Amino acid sequence: MFIPQPICTGCQGDHLEWVESSGRGRVYSFTTVHRPPRPEFDVPYVVAIVELDEGWHMLTNLIGCEPNSVQVDMPVEVSFERMSEEITLPMFRPVG
Image 1 (cartoon, rainbow, N blue to C red):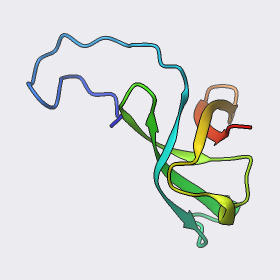
Image 2 (image 1 turned 90 degrees about the vertical axis):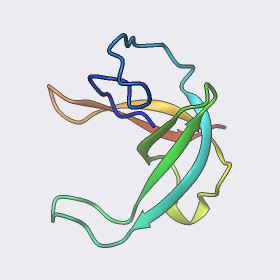
Image 3 (image 1 turned 180 degrees about the horizontal axis):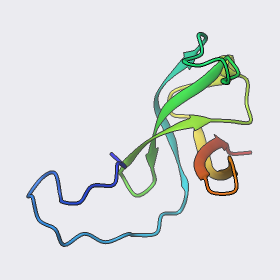
């Protein structure tokens, strides 16, 4: 799972490195949020686990599609969304 850590959760080693990804994958699992955690959130929105082509999983939001059109195994690609001057988040959208 893509959650940056200071050490490897498998072997406890600290020899970690960033590896570039293709940014493409498939929806592994998802849920549609209908009740916002805070009033600033627009609902509904889709939270998904995407399995990247390289084999690792990433928790993310799906954008650019209707929530009821999302399916497991749907092909997706990364889209870097600027949230503020300081924050850009990787989200995923359907391919094609």
